[in-house]
Amino acid sequence: MSDVDGTGEPDGAIGRFREELDPVVFLFGAGLTLGLILLYFFDPNLVQRGIAAGETVMYSYLNWALLAIVFLVVTFLVYLILGPWGRLRFGEEPPEYSFFSFFAMLYSAGFAAGVVFWGPTEALFYYADPSPLFDVEGGTAEAMTIAVQQTLFHWAIPQLAVFTIMGIGIGYYAYNYEDVPLRVSSALTPLLGRENLDGPIAKVVDVMAVFATIGGVATSLGFIGSQFIEGLRYQWGIDLGTTGIILVVTAMTLAFTVSMVLGVDRGIRRLSNFNMILFVILMVATLIVGPTAFLVLMGTQALGGMFNDFVAMSLFTGAGTDGGTTWMNTWTVFYWAWALSWSPFAGLFIARISKGRTVREVAFTGIAATSAASIPWFIFVGGTAVWSHHNGIADFGAVIAGEAGAEVSGFILFETFPLGTVFILAFMILVTTFFITSADSSTLAVSMMTTGGKAQPSNINRVFWGVLLGMMAAILMTLGGVNALQSAAIITGTPFAFVCLFTMIGLIREFVSDGSRVLLQEDSWLFGSGPKDEPSAAELSDDD
Image 1 (cartoon, one colour):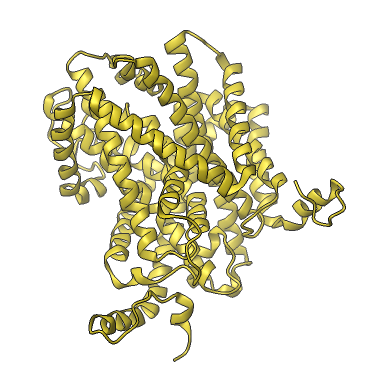
Image 2 (image 1 turned 180 degrees about the vertical axis):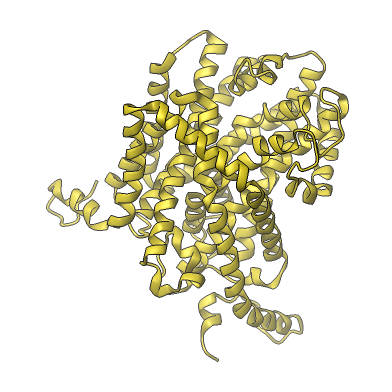
């Protein structure tokens, strides 16, 4: 770590750490997280009851809001891709990264660890218990296609949309207007006003963003840690117990902290590129080894069904169906809340790497290019799992019945393959490295949040939040495994549904004024008399 005064004294690094902090956001964000950790050590049952009570409130009164808001955000992003507003640019400088690196970082830092975790598992649950929206009996051949269709819906577009809307909201103002910092509250610039970005409402949003990020990323670290531990137990009979949970989480925390300290270019970018290569290799190998013809036919039908039923699935509340509301809360609402808990950090990180790109490029990469990467994975891996269970090649009955954790599905599937051990090792490496890129980018984002939007926070700041993140994940895992992790995601994510809504409203308000000039320039270009370059917001805001 370098010092700030050139003396080489360690006080230089500490001085930089103290000088860069936004004291309100740092103290309240750290205080909330540390307070929950300390309370756990004094009374873990109280923490567990509090998490359960918060989850109940969210499920009972705000589930409909999450469904409606996420659907509106998806609709708005599609318009940005197709409409004239997409020509607006994030600043006037050229992009920092190639499109492949930009895409790989955006995908890896978003939700790719969850994609790998749930890839072999999720369709199995829908196969056994299809959504009440569809009149399909569980465990049948017809249920296989519906199961993959439902999985594609949950992972292809809507989750990605909440990350993307926050990224556009933060980056658009930060790169095009003076005195707008690179932090989460900047997404509300049109509603708060630039002069109020250091005011109490902005501070509350940033503190919420810190807490939500810690909760959401700790949820993912818990999922990945439990998958790693369960894999060791299932495949090689190694039972690590509670101590093992702490050791695995500590090792993962150390790994992503090292990657984070290396920075975006040397750490996150290189690891993201490696992730995408291994991801594609494992996915294609599964297609070749699995039931290739079935996967192509079933996947085509499932993809068509997802687009055909997209609106119905987006707004399905379960009303008027037997157990529909419970099913919807368990799956769709949980996923939307989990994604929303990631939206502050994912949005901030997307904004951080999007300088120089157009709104259309960011929106397209955020929901279309990333969906194009996830869809084949769930078709090939999830479809193979369902087909193998339906035809008696692999037995996932214990997983479906809840007698075994979802963590073991990948190991059950890949051990039926030729060279199964190779597949299992690649799977464990992939899920771990994807999490490392997600965790280090999220910790970088939290560090940026607590320093008022500095793009390069000090290493002390980054390490502090990395350790805190690891501690939170370990606590959630020992509290109750997957159930506690899901509850934490629901509680921390739900408030950001409304932040995303207000971000969208602010962007519409801003784009309406800028967009009229974009449309005029675009019309002039169509008739051969106007400029072809996409204008920046700064150019559009200049007086004529």
